[in-house]
Amino acid sequence: MPAAPQNAEPSSAAPARGLPQIARLAPGREVAPLAGAIGLFFAGRGAVAIVINQVTGWVSGKLPGRRFVIGVSGAVGAIGALGFALLRGYVEVLIVGAVAFGIGGVCFSQLFAYTKELAQEQGRPVTAFMSVVRAVFSAAWVIGPPAGLFVLARYGFGPLYLATAGLSLVTAVLGRWCLPQVPS
Image (spheres, rainbow, N blue to C red):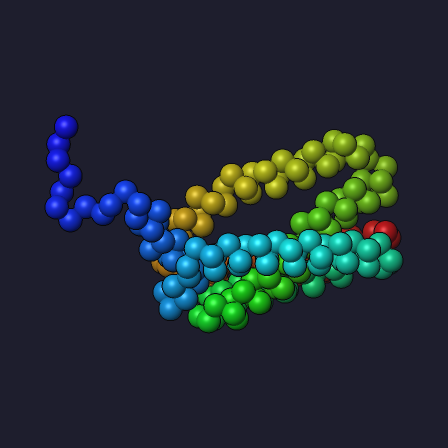
């Protein structure tokens, strides 16, 4: 068995070796998050997203249509992506990530609800219609990560988040003004 190199880290430090790579997941190198801070970020973002989704689900059922909510959530998602591209402080990134991406994430559930209502309104079979929409979302989950990694590796975090903001704005515009009106 070959001997360990002289500058090898002790095995108890092995988890710490991943922190520089995790720090690269932050919007800027100035953030330099610790493991606990990353955990707090994702826990806080998840908790806020749950509350926002519950409130939005309750409110959107009382609105005359879902297009407004889709448009607003897409626009706020774009603001969140711009915040990630521009902000460097941990607290600011946490707040923008939790609130803006929490509201931006509402777009997905609202699109599914809109699709169901549209299928019912047009007299189409809901299951088949929803299956097509779910297939498109699934394709996005398969194509999106490699495409995002390509943009990240080639251009960096700023352009990746700017591209995300652009796609969120496209969703907002299409959702608000291009979808047919369907009463909820």
